[in-house]
Image 1 (cartoon, rainbow, N blue to C red):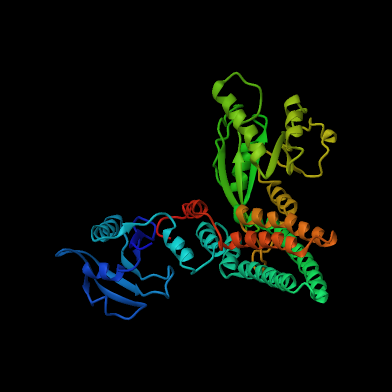
Image 2 (cartoon, rainbow, N blue to C red):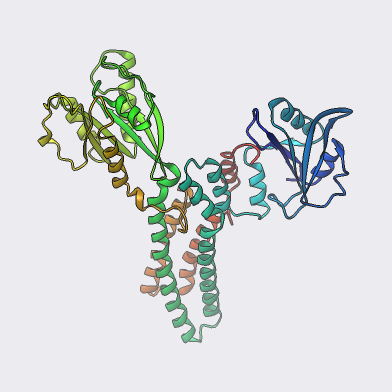
Length: 451
């Protein structure tokens, strides 16, 4: 991390401004060589300076240069941000000039990676930065901000401090075995702390899994036989003609996707090809992909035709979705009823028709009810926001059980300490207190350039 990195930190394209960001020891001097205006090496930290970026004696653009000196910066290194006119040519040319003068193109997420490695933020906060950038709904943004404020970090650090205190007491017990009262106090303290910690972790994990939909959204597959109205229902849910609708069975041969926000949660709809036996190679491939979507989805909307009797294909589809969250939509209710509704053992049945939006609001309300979307809050709750964090937290639970069992079985307290250290280490992995280089490289590679 001794070199100077540079990247464009704004979306590349036509706009009011673009920002080229640099970080690293010597970046102020580097920019100063290409800057016509004040001597940037002599300006105060956290100032904005008007001037021009030059390529030798040629003006590239009129700019505002923000100079921020370490350690009070995002990366805890010297940072310079060049605010230039938005546009591909000017921005790229400034980037080129910086590289020609000694900067290196930053890798994805490298600014945030340096902030983490330099102790500016922990791993939970770094992941929150990425979540803010990727937020697609207001609830997702609020949840990410809560993480960035360090609420979860505070809880984890509290747990680790309590474990350290237990380990210290155990060391005293080992060093002074003649004092039996110390051993009794230590064992009682371990029992109380372990029980409280397990209950707290369980609650956080439970809340995390409930609120996972805030970040990831809900993947909804719309399935059914050909020509039952799947594409029409998708178009009505989205409020646009996203999918082609015809009277010809098998019109949809590939998945069609679209998203809406419902109660602050993003719903990702997938209209699948009609599922039936077919010899058409292309349609057959579409049917296979439709069945895959059933397995991948969080919710299945199974569309049936009110004007037709249940077929073997309908019954097969019902069997495929019965172990998932699903809603049965009986479409074409404006036509004669031929469907044997009494054979459907499901409380989540919605009726829609072929010509209006009738039933679409009921369908949306049923989705809200199934996932309790109105009750999901996004802020003021300490939760784990990704699989990595949840997995590490879950790995702590059986070790906590081992500690409690060891106390009950009167295992020597120094052996109990081994498990306590394992829990302390696992919690440290959540924060990034101990990590592998491969994990860090993989995590930050998911960031966008310039962040």
